[in-house]
Amino acid sequence: MIARLNEDERAKALAHLSNWTAITDPDGLSRRFTFADFNAAFGFMTRVAILAEKADHHPEWSNVYNRVDIVLTTHDAGGLSQRDVDLARAIDALLE
Ligand SMILES: C[C@H](O)[C@H](O)[C@H]1CNC2=NC(N)=NC(=O)C2=N1
Image (cartoon, rainbow, N blue to C red; front, side, top):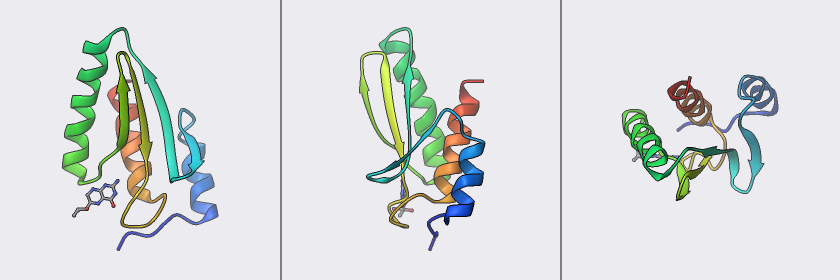
């Protein structure tokens, strides 16, 4: 069973995830992405979906036209875990 991050682990992880916001309900990370249009937003979602399937770790997300809102939280852990941090980094890397 994957564990929630403790305070020390959270602080260290967040220091490397400046684009993401720590949230409490659910306990996790969130980030809003804005693209030129729906096509670009959906293309991004497709790439994130492939990452998520490979990692067997899936985002909570919504899309409105060119905007994608992502929340990363670990259901199996009841909150923020290393899996969320790893997926956030992998998502950021898609845009580099
Ligand atoms: C059975 C399967 O491995 C689990 O349900 C995985 C799938 N994707 C998941 N995604 C997220 N965000 N949290 C989980 O706990 C989780 N668990």
